[in-house]
Each structure stands twice: as C-alpha cells, then as structure tokens.
Amino acid sequence: ASSKVTNFPEFVVVGMVDGVQMVHYDSNIQKVVPEQVWMNKADAEYWEREREKFLHSQHDFKADVDIL
Image 1: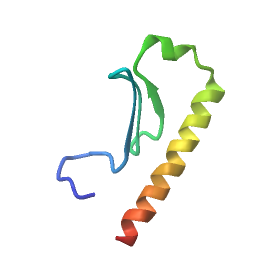
Image 2: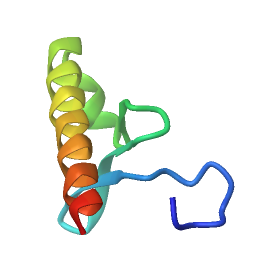
Image 3: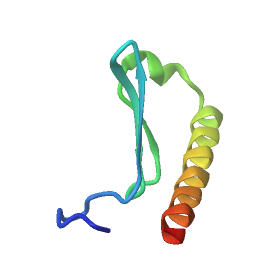
C-alpha cells in the first residue's frame, strides 16, 4: 500500500443515497457494513452477494493497478 497510515485498507467501497452513507466495505475486514438502521432489514444472502461483488471488484482493481 502507498499509505503510511497503519492498517489503512487497500480498497474501500462506500455506498451513498442522497448524500448519506448507507454501507461501506474495506479490504481489511472484507465485509459489507450497513451504516443506516433501515439497511439492517436486508437478509444474510443479500450481504453475502454484496460481499462477493465487492471482493471481486477489489481483486479486479488490484489487477488493474498492478498493470500500471
């Protein structure tokens, strides 16, 4: 990682709706974390699908950066 900040994630996703953060994901924890109470209504299958999508995006992003 290029940052000198300890434990700074290599990859981060932040989901926003109308300027309000609703979820986040980072490469350190590799989990999608709801940031709004209403997001807790989603079932475990939803969170696993989202985690898999973000993990795939993380790997694609890393491969793209490695090419540069």
